Amino acid sequence: MSTPDDSAQISTNIAIWGPPGSGKTWLIHALAKELSWYNDRDSDFSYSLVDDTGVRLYPSPPNSVDQGATMAPEDRVWTFERKGKKQSQAHIISTQRHNIIVHDDKGQNLVDAVTPFVGQSLTIETLRYSPNIIILLDPSTVKNLSISTPVPPPTVYEKHEYTELLLNLVNALAAQGVERHLAVCLSKSDLLNLILPVEEIVKACFGVDTLKVLQDPRIHTRFFRVSSVGFLRQPHGKKSPNITIEGKISNEEVWEPFNVVSPFFWLFEAIERARIGGGNTLFSDRGKIYLPYPRPRIK
Image (cartoon, rainbow, N blue to C red; front, side, top):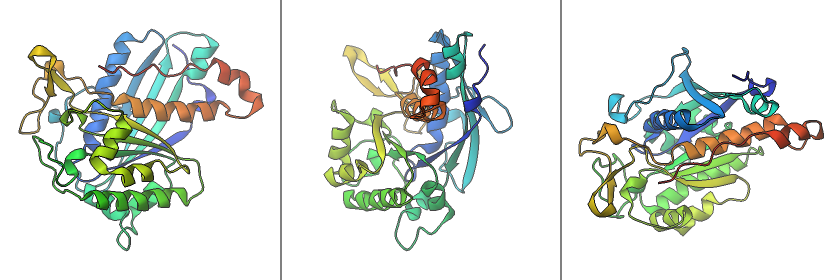
């Protein structure tokens, strides 16, 4: 096994923002499940996720953990590590560790945090000073969108309300003048029967104004379509959400989250490339042999 490169010993903050019930807690457990798939198949690297007590987070379906909405602010510290299985220089350089502080809060507090005159809270300070942010956009929280969901969200919003919330958030982030990476995740994509680029789905569900806000040139943004519960294969090739009306996984044996790993791998790789040297010519050779993360599995 390769040992972590010296550049890997830097903590990384990743903040998660999403309205009530958008799946912030589920996302982490779905990530652990997807990492187990890569561990079984990647001949170059192993992947792990441990909590702040050193206990590894094993892939457990969302119904095996607390499913309720987050009720109070909490910082969950997870250490992610990609460890090379070979001793080449490329594997050593690409062996990286991230001490990730996943800032979570009750969804309504996260909404209040980006609402004028309300959001003077620790949450908005967390978002402002986190260079890497994951935003969860839950289409079931959009009013009058006619999406059938087994578990209705506690709060729904008009499209213009979403636009205003995200505009306040993006302006607060851009005002700090630091480089930021924003992973916009269309969560619960198992509820959508739309075969379109993810940006087009965001426009259809949340409106063109919301899409324009998220494409602010002051921030590095990428869009992802994700589902923590995944799909069930039905006869004739049709798919349905792998979730019951009680909000539990329907079939644990075939539980496969959809694309959850992609926003994390994108953020990790951006961080690691900057760590290894970026534009510094002293580290240019190291950057050339860096091994990128595997392509996501999209089924």
